[in-house]
Image (cartoon, rainbow, N blue to C red; front, top):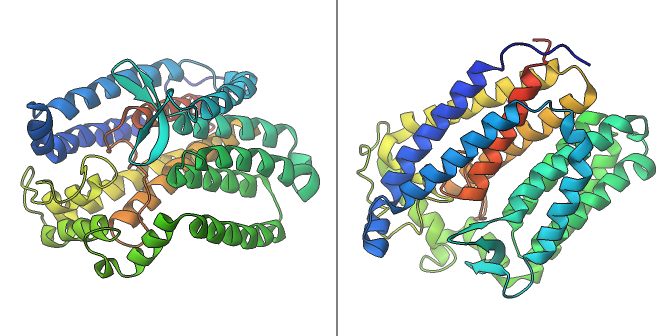
Length: 366
């Protein structure tokens, strides 16, 4: 058993709390107008986000005290529970539908999103699988295929909701983990071809996805429907300029950009804090990912390495997709910006993941 260091990575802790604090400020700034109009309380979303943050931080600090290899023993049970929840959420009357997706299970005044927790459960199980059977990873049939069958089964259940954004993050994270474990490049060439065909099939199977692709290529072709969100996002980013309009001075949050505190909060950051503010946020994420990679490289066993790689990859892919959508570089898909966007399941999941990463850092050789 590795010797535990006395302290976790304090730089990672500082970066996490900085992003969390900035997120609370921006959630209030982005949502105050809508909250006042809909709920007669400009602090409605802020208070809920603060509650989510409190629960998430408490969970992070608790997870920090649990030796990370404990998750190897619980990985299978975690995965089974998440699979059950993914099935339960599809049952009418239990699953809560929002914006066309049945992705939530209501718990009192709040709700949880099982697909978010499936990401972390899949990372833990795959880290266990890859660390115990790495000798088979160069074999597609014995190593890569079993892992992919499991991943795409989960992806299929998530797509029944449907939730392409979360499913894409999960699949992308698992592909990175399998690649790091030593899978052959030729396997990924075939997977890339199959993935492209599958993506085309998913797009063709749902007219709204076709509209999203066409609106991504030319959002002004349908400015009042499929291209609306992207256009409004660009209208927010453009006037921000170098230094922004000032904190709280966003114009797009006045019912132009739909639910600006959620997936498009980076647009409000760029509008109010400008290029400087947006770059600062991306710098924080870059530093956080650097610390995560450093922890993965210094882990004392393969399970810790793969677990850290999975967590870092999940955060990185989610940031790239969210910022890519907001800036018009990718088609619109519903995915939150880690630590910054409003939402209990996403925020709690990210803080729990950081807690696991911090525990791994206590055993790191660096």
